[in-house]
Image (cartoon, rainbow, N blue to C red):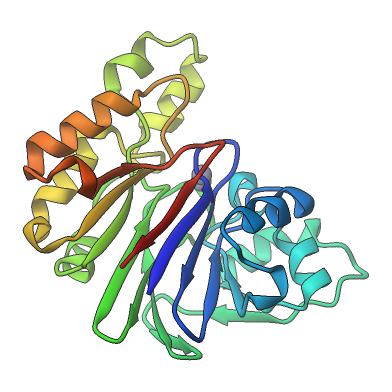
Length: 256
Ligand SMILES: [Zn+2]
Ligand SMILES: [Zn+2]
């Protein structure tokens, strides 16, 4: 199994999880053409994608999802809450195969096992996901306000982890964001700050992880170098095992 990202941050998120048989797109937060262009950087043809999984209804995760699904006839997997929230922005002429998934139910897409992980975030029914194939496992966890015991339990022995490092608390407080936005981002249904993400790393078996990729960094209120340093200090991993996903350039294939 392997992983790449088309980009991650508040302007758009999209990830690819792939093995020899199956290619999954996790979120589609770039427009249709942009998604196709970005996929081509990693040699992924749109008609090779077997399914799109949506984590929640925020624009930076769904922007191109429905037009992509309609054009390339790719089924979409999402929670009922996400489906309800997206419904009004789906073009009536689209012909899309929606699959409603439940928080307590792992399921298979071809030969990849997908486990939804409910997260606290200001969306109707947000899930993040863990993927397993041939004893390999990867979890993608972004867009959450705090860490739950359920998350820790589920990803305790994960082998590759994509984890939100949204903001540095002080940078957010000192930023020119309006107070309401600061409260939203820092709130229990907002985004993880760097120290919370570190706390999550320390709560799981990080010694067994092959690599950690930081995602959904705030362009204004965070810093790559700081995030790398924090992960390195907390886990003692070498720099090869610590990645930061870029908003513009995403990240190239990483083997899981
Ligand atoms: Zn987001
Ligand atoms: Zn969100």
